[in-house]
Image 1 (cartoon, rainbow, N blue to C red):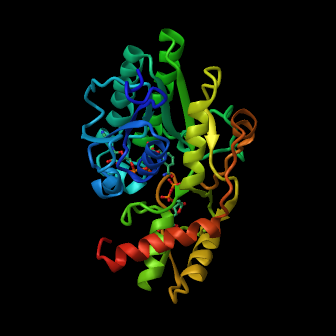
Image 2 (cartoon, rainbow, N blue to C red):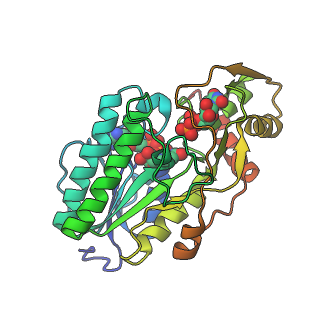
Length: 323
Ligand code: NAD
Ligand code: UDP
């Protein structure tokens, strides 16, 4: 179903394509010459993230909510539509679950009809507050089904279930990635995530808000590394369905992250402690052995190296009053 003008190019749908990760993925796909259809309802994404692609003949932007059916003809689907930060996904929790579950059903239906290969942006949140550390794909997780994070965690878990049932029942060609915390330029400055919060606070000279004792850990992957993982998984053979962990196994406490941000921004900000949000996982680090062996993929960009362009991006937003 490739274009008659360019038989090598694929027609690729990216849902959530105007978001942080989706926009980086659209960059890579358009650069590779594919025909990209970017779908977004702009709940957390912005047209500005893909404005630089609008003049390209192989890029198309459609305002659409994935909880409603979509009729397009495509070869590949990357299903990224879903708010990712706790502040955003808890703003309208019912819509968050609908986006994950109804969105998955609609996109899987599209894949079934068109024969397209379909990628799901799942999450390390399916492991909940893990009692196994680091997390391998075989770990079933420790998730609260009724807490404030459940709309996201359980929505994503149900989406994974749907992906594997469409695969077993209908032979849909699926790729499920479990993404660990990722950062980089085009993160939303007010998304409340720790990297954007700390950088914005440091640049404005405000207190850096450490939730709890700050000894909880996360692993941070730079966006370019992660998108390379998406492409490697999509290009893998049909036997590689996943789920596959994608993330950077470097593990840092929130205090260590704050120290790195203060150092790299040269900020005079100091740290202040605030209460830990409910169900906040104590530790998180991916075991990426499977991605290394099956996809020959591993992240290359160290935290401090990735923080530098991210800080430069937020500085640019502040200069232009976008933040
Ligand atoms: P983001 O909020 O920047 O992007 C999500 C995009 O989806 C936004 O553009 C938003 O407007 C769009 N969207 C939301 N609901 C929609 C709907 N119903 N219909 C159409 N579009 C909709 O977040 P992100 O960080 O780019 O995350 C992208 C995907 O990766 C999400 O599915 C998220 O769950 C997953 N993920 C991200 C991370 C991370 O650290 N960034 C970690 C794990 C998983
Ligand atoms: N966090 C923090 N200060 C902030 C924002 C977040 O200490 O201003 C902590 C948060 O409690 C969590 C970690 O940073 O332990 C990562 O939070 P984030 O919302 O980025 O992602 P998630 O909890 O979904 O991994």
